Figure: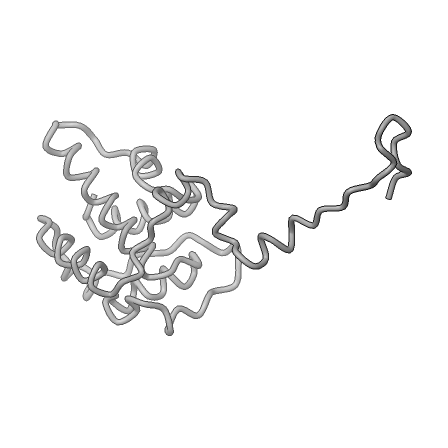
Amino acid sequence: MRAPDSSGDGFVYRINIYEIYAKNPTLLLTENDSHNNQKPQNINTLNEIVKEIDQMPINHQNLNYKNPRIFWDRTKSMDISQEAGFNLLHEKEKTLCSKLRLTPSIYLKAKYNILKAAQKHKMEGKEFKKSDAQKAVNFNVNKASVLWNFFSQLKWV
C-alpha cells in the first residue's frame, strides 16, 4: 500500500472491484462476448444441429468401418460423459472430443461449421484446405486442424 498523495485531500480510497465481480461475473462480459460466445447448451439446439448435419451429403456410416487416427497427444483426456449432447455422438467422436478436451456441444457446432464451409467450397469448385477449417471455428487452430484431419480421413471434407 502506498502513502497518501500530499497533493490530495489526505484521504485514501480503497475500492475492492474483485468483490463486485465475484458476486456477478457477468459484469465482466462485454456486449460482444455475450453475443459471440453463445454455445449451444440446450439439448434441443444440439438436436437441431445434429439434424442439420444429418442432412448434409456426407456418409455418416464411414465411422462404423473406418478408424480415423487422432493426432493429438498433448494433454490428458477429459471425461465428457456427463456433458450435454454426449449421447448424440458416435463412439469415435466421443474419443475425439475427450482427447481434444472439447465438450460435445462445442464439437457439434464446430463439426457443423466445418462441414458447411467444406460444402460451400465444393459448390464454388474450390479445394477445402486445413486453413479454411481453422477459419470456420472459434477455437485453437491446432484443434481445428485435428478436426480437419479426422473429417478428411472419413472423406467428409
